[in-house]
Each structure stands twice: as structure tokens, then as C-alpha cells.
Image (cartoon, rainbow, N blue to C red):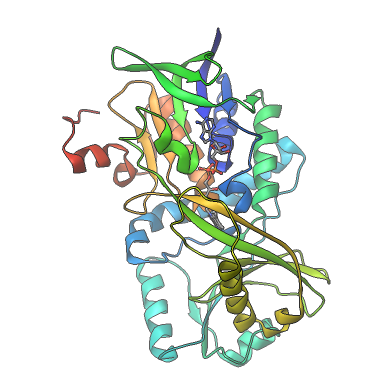
Amino acid sequence: MKTYDVVIVGGGIIGGSIAFELTQRNLRVAVLDRQEFMREASWAAAGMLSPAPDCPAAIPLVPLGRASLALYPKFVDAVEDASRQRTGYRTGGAIEVICHGDAERELSTLVALHHGLGLACEPLPLDEARKMEPALGRDARAAALLPDECSVEPRALTSAVLAAAASAGAALSPGVEVTSLVLEANKCIGVKTSSGEIFHAAQVVLAAGCWSSQIPDAAPYAPTLPVRGQMAALRHSGTPIRHVLRSDRGYLVPRGMKSPQTVVVGSTIENAGYEKCVTSGGIEKILSAANELAPELAKAEIIETWCGLRPGTPDQLPILGPVDVDGLVFATGHYRNGILLAPVTAKVIGEWIAERRTSIDWEAFSPLRFLQARGDRSVTA
Ligand SMILES: Cc1cc2nc3c(=O)[nH]c(=O)nc-3n(C[C@H](O)[C@H](O)[C@H](O)COP(=O)(O)OP(=O)(O)OC[C@H]3O[C@@H](n4cnc5c(N)ncnc54)[C@H](O)[C@@H]3O)c2cc1C
């Protein structure tokens, strides 16, 4: 029988970041993943660290996103120190480009929305934007600079986070599929795996991405659903792109500053179930958005295509915190923002598990909201 203080289900960026946080609090932690670690959404992500809402439903997330962005420099230092691996963290801002419609009106709406949410955003005259980014296309009608936004390389970051957790004592167990929670008198005392083995723990953290809803007894609290995103990586020899470039049709995220430079382009947002495949229509869509932003990229070599399944939720907000079963905590449903939200998620889950308090208001993200919405149970936790 294996016994830990905390068992974490899921070895993506969320499970890994929580494990690293908890080991620093001297807890005995195991992270279980049904396959090799970091093969899912955390491996597929673009790595933009943008707290800006991409739709009205995402507005309640802005304070959490800002808090996480502020934690990033220390988080990256701690992870890079402990793992001796690099994370590809880059500051320097993003440029939002408007190519269609009434550009001046859209620009002032964008700036006002950001300012109203406490986010830095300034109109950027197009001649200045082109000085900053010579690759910017002729279709650009207006632009804004989001100077506080950053980016990271998600594969490097997730690998470093898991290595940091392991170096601090976390037991990483790949190839261990959790099939159910072990419940005893309204308390979760561990998890059962597909081989029948039981991992006992005082606390179980559910961080299984879009598959969280497939674990019986977890589903009512975490009705996660997969939202497919297709991506491509291009290699070009033109002037290196320095900022994340974004439009309402897609985005470019540069990796490194040397020529030839790799640029990651994305992404589709598709409800395709759990089917992970790259389609010609999906790639056509993201490449055409990329070529509109930076036409020189039409000459770039396509070096990789891939897709991933974002952990979506019915209200597009993450699922964070304890429930009305003792010893069970959720950290899932991060949808399009799991890379951004990893540091703050690790912080609040760590505070809750070790101190039974949180320094950040997470009420809006409680897993109990889904029970309340369905009127299933009387909610006491
Ligand atoms: C194309 C794309 C682009 C994105 N771009 C960005 C971006 O620019 N910025 C940003 O902040 N976010 C971005 N995201 C979102 C981000 O990737 C996710 O929110 C984040 O990776 C979720 O992390 P996770 O650890 O919860 O899930 P995952 O990385 O999916 O990890 C879940 C893990 O749980 C394991 N698991 C599942 N079921 C079980 C089980 N029963 N037993 C054991 N293990 C199990 C899986 O094998 C997996 O390893 C993007 C996502 C995609 C797909």
C-alpha cells in the first residue's frame, strides 16, 4: 500500500506546478499520469501569458490572470533553479492587430476594455508598430501595445516544473491510470488505479485536464469537456519577430530571436470530442491568419503541426478548490489559460492544503457551483 500526504491526478502543467509547490511545503506528494507526463494540453499550448479576456465570459478570470502573471518571474526563477532547465520565459509585450471592420472604433473599445480591467494597453500608431515589427502586414488597420504580456515555451516549462517537483522529492508515476476515487464516510482517502492498486492520501487533487469529468465521483464537480486547438510551427529566415502578434483570427508566438526563427501559430477552437487530429481545414485557417499578420511567413517552412485538447468548462471558468467531500480538491478546467494560471493555481491550492486558507478570492471558481446550478445537493463546504 502506498501512502502520501497528497496524491495529484494528472501530470500536466497544473499537476506539476501544484506538486512543486507542495514539496516546498515539505509534503509527501505523488503525481500519477495514465501515460508519459506532459503529453496533452500542456504540451500543445502556445505559451502566451495574457490576462486579457478573449470574450465576456472570461472577464471574471482577469484578476486571477493578473495575479498569476505577477507571480511568473519568481515562479520561473524557482523552477529554473530547482530543475536546472530553461523555460523560455520572455517579457516585452504583445501587439494586438486589427485588420478588419471599423478599426478606429474597435481600437478605442479594446483600449477602454483593458483600462477598465486594470490592464495596460496603448494605441500604437501603425508606423511605430511597423518599426517595432517590420514583418507586420499591409492589412493592419490599427494596433495596440499590451506591454505587460509575456510568453513562455510550454513544453520546456512543463518539463522544468516536473523536474523541479521531482528534485524536491515528489514521486512521479507515469503509466498509472486513476479509475476511481476511494471514498469512506464522505471523505476521500485515496485513488484506485486500473491495475487495482490503491494510493492512499490525506488529500487528493484532481488535475486531469479535460479528462477530469471521466473519473466517476469527480464528474459532478468537474464537468470538463475537450476543446480542440490546432497549431503549427514555422521556421523563417526574415527579420525575427519580437512580440506576440495577435488578431481576432489568430496569433504568432516567436520562439527565440535568432534567424532562422521558429514561430508558433494558432489556433482553432473546435468541439470535436476527444478526437486528436490535425485537419487540412484547421491548418489552412491558422496559416491564413498568420500570413495576414505577417505576409513574409508565407515563405516559411512548416516544421511541425499538432493539436491539443483544452480543458473547457460550461462557463469557461476554471474549477478550483475543495468540495463537500473531505480530502478532495479540484484544480482543472483552465481552458485557454492553464499556462498563464499555473503559478496562481499552485499557490492557492498549496495554501488551502497546507493552511486551510487562501490569499486570493476563488469563490467564483468553486467546483460546488455546478452542484448548486443543478440543485443536486445541499452545499455545506
Ligand atoms: C492549442 C492550444 C493552445 C493553448 N495556448 C495557451 C496559451 O497560449 N496560454 C495559456 O495560458 N494556455 C494555453 N492553452 C491552454 C493550456 O494548455 C491548458 O489550460 C493547460 O495545459 C491545462 O493543463 P492541465 O495540466 O490541466 O491539463 P493537461 O496538460 O491536459 O494534463 C492533464 C493530464 O492528466 C492526465 N490524465 C487524464 N486522465 C487521467 C487519469 N484518469 N489518470 C491519470 N492521469 C490522467 C493526462 O494524461 C494529462 O497528462 C492552450 C491549449 C491548447 C490546446
